[in-house]
Image 1 (tube, rainbow, N blue to C red):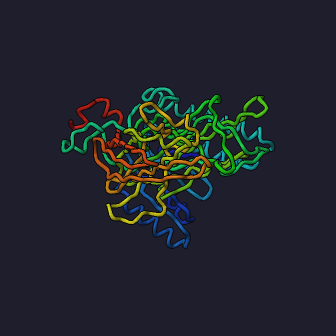
Image 2 (cartoon, rainbow, N blue to C red; image 1 turned 90 degrees about the vertical axis):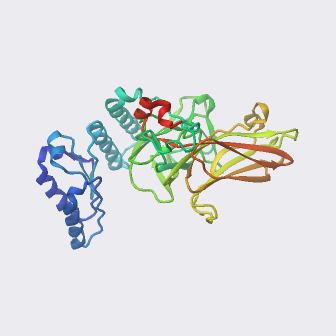
Image 3 (cartoon, one colour; image 1 turned 120 degrees about the vertical axis):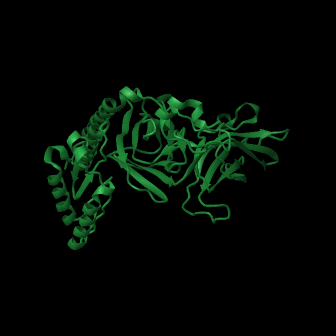
Length: 444
């Protein structure tokens, strides 16, 4: 069932509150963003929920008269047995309202299409609507829908320690760590292996531009197999700030093995603002596939950029038969036991030496940026394959996070000295302020 959209300015404050109270009595109420002036109403809703004997989640909402009069109050979104109130934002309320309607339509119609072609046409139409929503709300201030985020993971690496560590343009905010993206299931006549290409991107409130997680064109499609169904991620290129909401976009296609026209695999965009605990998996489904996106929240973040994994000295090249480099960001102070739910993040995994070898002994990494807890640590694991394709040697080094500058560690892999270089930086949280303040925002 598509969402029924109501604006509080059309109904009046008391009518809206009455509708909310009725929904609280029925249970399963979800509210977002209330200021302290409405504590009485919040308590009353919780009491209603308890009296009804139903499970109800009550979060804060903003419902002040001035916002209603100006037409910037939250939109009420009635969806199934949930009443969702979106935060009041005069610049984006219409865009969010339209996006919620698109997502609810997808939920309602899923399974009711007569053919796969009909479902994929509906997906394409909804993605076009989503794109139109974004263009209407953000093109003037953020540029083209296709623009990539221009902020760097090393935006504050050269900040001088001890000088205005916390500033208006950067901090150590909560972020989302993207662990992996897996093609978990295929259907609709598709068979392994699949040559997949396209884009998976994520947007946050810092600049609302695309932060690419996966990106490749048809000439460089990735072959996915039942034994290795994970996309080779190239991002994010900077930490994904998770102080409000994020948008995830998937536009993936499958190459036709016969050489005829390629087919869409999935074309969807979703808005998320729910709390994530430890490692969470989000499912994206249609008639052809189920894609699992694994992520986790980093509560207080420093960005780590793996600048280089380099074989130094006169030792032999240890990665002739391939290499696997992974990072394990571990939360908690040094000495804290490893969290079994902490995700291992693959920076590169290949048995093709030509794809690994760079000049001056550098190992080519497909992914470079990791979010690390300010009081945690970062373990970097380096593995070399043998001629038989099995793991031959494994070494790891440990880094403690810094607020800026660069740190290096060394280890030996198959007799060769390997140097790992990491750049550290605060996280840019507001592009507009950074553009105004420039380097002065770094406190250097």
